[in-house]
Length: 178
Ligand SMILES: [Cu+2]
Image (cartoon, rainbow, N blue to C red; front, side):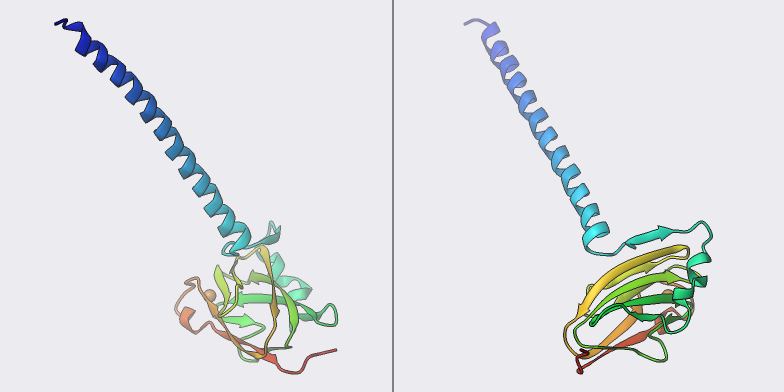
């Protein structure tokens, strides 16, 4: 019995095993990379967890001082559409805290969100509205309020001693505007 035969077999086995291992390492690295990119894509573009920005400002105080963010912050842009300029400050939302933001059912609303001080999280419970309020950045998100109801605004980004009280209300009335 020759002693080279088992060695040759072993060499061949190792060669094939190595090739398979390389292929499977490659496949798993590609899978991880694809899943990572998809996850980041969803977080940024679909889920709205990161501010969808219209603009970054060099001075972090600029958006908070813009005319749009003063006063009621609500602008009607069409029969059933509104722009809402939402500003978070420690520890309230304007509009929404104190006096609720009141709109008719069927309203298509684009929220422009910024912060007047530190980072806050603008979340409207029971909706997909959820973005970060950042000083110097205006984020935006659109949502259609189909049915009447009361929606709670919360701050979902810890922002100091009054964070848990940083709440507001959106009231959607039954009367459809025409
Ligand atoms: Cu806050």
